[in-house]
Image 1: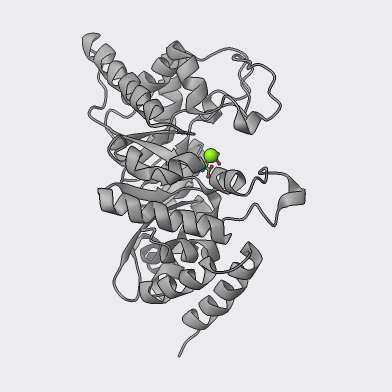
Image 2 (image 1 turned 30 degrees about the horizontal axis):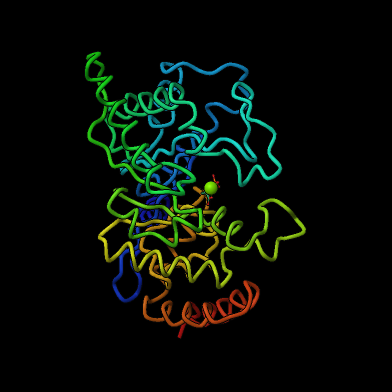
Length: 328
Ligand code: PEP
Ligand code: MG
């Protein structure tokens, strides 16, 4: 019985018409990493590193950062691991790096914007990642990238981190893929400008949704708008996948919407072939992929993109998916 359950977890997710969908996990701790491994993740599509810093009074040194990351990596199974540099600022302020008062922190100095303003801190993050990942297929991802030049600067920082470690004779992973979150509308609308600079893209639908719909995430009064099933978000995903595909750039989705079977179905219909989900949703998302065809999901998402609201898109997806997965 146990073997049967395990094979369902570990078997690849392939649609009924033969399209493989990569199913990765989002992790933020050593416990998450163990859960991802035990639930059959094919790798990690988003390792949030904020946990290393939030709640600390003092900045951890490079050694401490590398050790904390290594503890997470040690619990993971095989497969690539996308480690995101700290997405700090906005809803995740740092005690040891206070920022100036901002009226709209979500539109403020956060993510890569903050890292680029603190070069020593950023350099230590990158060296720690390269050191911790010495034996793994580690990819590095930058959050909140808005302008191509930010991606160029981030690449230069990663290359410098490699050179520093090499000069000091410290074992580390290199080369690594360097990619970016697509979560700012400007980046989503200029994908072809980033596709040559980033080795891979990951769509962050939590932030992309809040910015597209001008609806602050976590504001309970705006739940109906903070929904990745919204036609505007689906259209953005469709556009990003199309342009990334033309440029031959790998694209995944790591926003929470990917963990919702209904929304992940719409994302696949929009062209997504790689999803990164919460560890406890891995088996469910894989099972759903096996129950549907790409052809049917394409048609479903085409209809959803013509809806007026997320609620309407969800309604038609619920009906369609119910009939797709019911026997006969
Ligand atoms: C996102 O914005 O979708 C995302 C995955 O990043 P975070 O939730 O950490 O901002
Ligand atoms: Mg985000």
